[in-house]
Length: 336
Image (tube, rainbow, N blue to C red; front, side):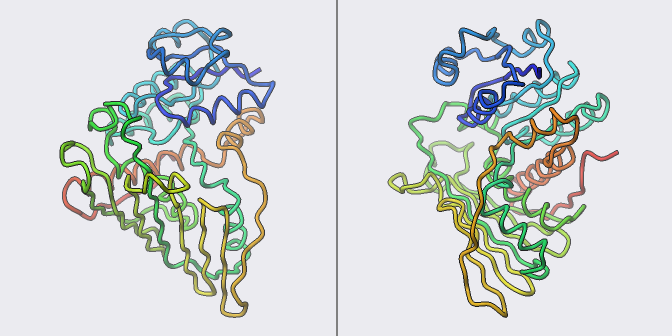
């Protein structure tokens, strides 16, 4: 039996964990740390009666022996919870962003190395059907060598439903350290690069009354032989039929693939074959691979190094955006 605790219910992505726990009889949710009663009622429902609820992760970790701690709290508070969970001997699975500052990331990296515990961010875009399909095509050489990647990540702001901390740097961090990290992870995965450069710009187009908040960003990432542009924003039309029309275009030496995550399709064309829509398989659950690995005693695909590296690149991009676009170097993290 794997004993699981959840720290923070600040984002709907916590449902990824609750779904996984409900799906697997080998997992048992033993405790939750969340001081907001409304959030507990929204996400835990009837489950709350079966778990011990704490106001803070310190008391949870002091009172319970747990194998895995899932982190889904206020973004700027996540790093302290991650470090505490690792020191308590637990593996960590986290919603993105893992943390909001580079010094926080350094503390997580140091503690993970000292404790030998895993840190895995739920980069669920890796496991969407269209992503799995394009990875197979690239591995088979259908697209040749990838050279350019361009992605776009519009999100609905739904301002009325956002808590106050979401619009402050000391709660949210910044857009560049948050929204682009999924696509940064994919670029790093597809390139296999261990170092490169990153720069970014960010701005506030719609909410001048919130000077600490940016609602759009653009990242330029060099990763090995791949140059990537990653755009993300909180400008998706509120009346749109999807939360965000997330897309990625991969141009290789032998062909091009266009991922449309919102509408679950993959369009491909090569020099020798007319355009086609690639058949897709089933989607993997966001936390499925992580718990497969925990139960098997192995390392998940999104391992500590992948989690720390993508987070580090995103936070460097945030630093670049804060400085007006300075080009900064990144290197792979989390490997001794």
